Length: 73
Image (cartoon, rainbow, N blue to C red; front, side, top):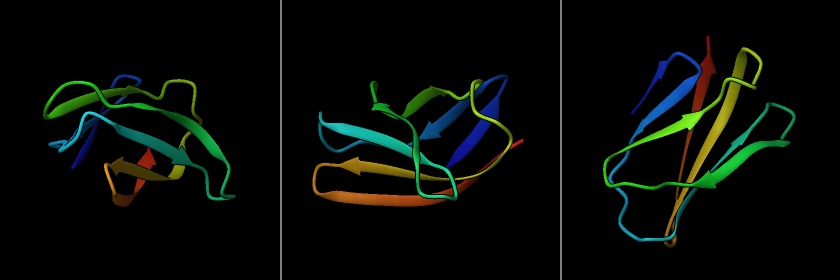
């Protein structure tokens, strides 16, 4: 589940491994942001530099891949 705060994307995701990362892609398929998820259940990703629009969020947790569409307001 995702929610937005002022300039940040809050990810509610219980990671299973220490090597959990995320990537955000624009609709053209270009990666616009990536990083590692720290913490246990809630992760804050700054997205202030991204323009409003639709993106694809991918989370890699060990050998699992989770994908969801997000809309930045």
